[in-house]
Image (cartoon, rainbow, N blue to C red):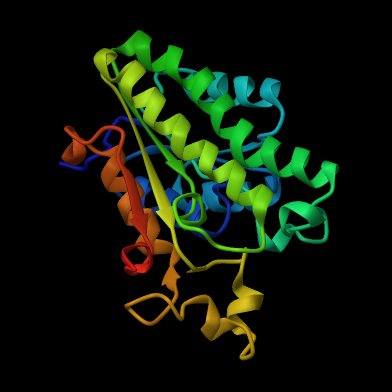
Length: 252
């Protein structure tokens, strides 16, 4: 029996990186996957590949998230799993400055927090009522190792991801009694488009995982597998967990 047979799954930021890896795994396990991404064309291509549906979205806009959840529930009336994965990081430096607190302009704070933290909050806000109506569900939020370990250089990003960790704990306590589990993954350096150029730079790449006991960057599938586990019934007694997926970086 496939773990997500007949279940409706929404993955934000689903068209690339960890989101795309998760979409493929959910679909392979029988999930009816909605690939939600700001790159609508890429979302459509992946949805066609895995037999899912695509939805173009800017997660910083609450009305679009509300429409996404309604779209996901069309027909079946269900929403079983939400993977809040969409975020901006290093790859968005042309749009938002990633810097220390004293060097981060207000517009960067607003944009990064809107996507990385408010987007997660909005996703939960509009998924929970649908899950309540069917008796439960599972939410997995994607934070970062920077949310739980002091790492320099991207303070607005760190702040937003820390908010995701705190929100995860609160929602787990609030909605666990109603059979909605909420957990969180905190990836370390992962070879995805968000930081691939840094990892490929011989002057920078090795320093990004110098503190990783496994001695390498992770891959998207290694995070996606943990997220899929947390969303599955195999993790039925896991709620409010903040799970580093970082090769042991947090253990130092």
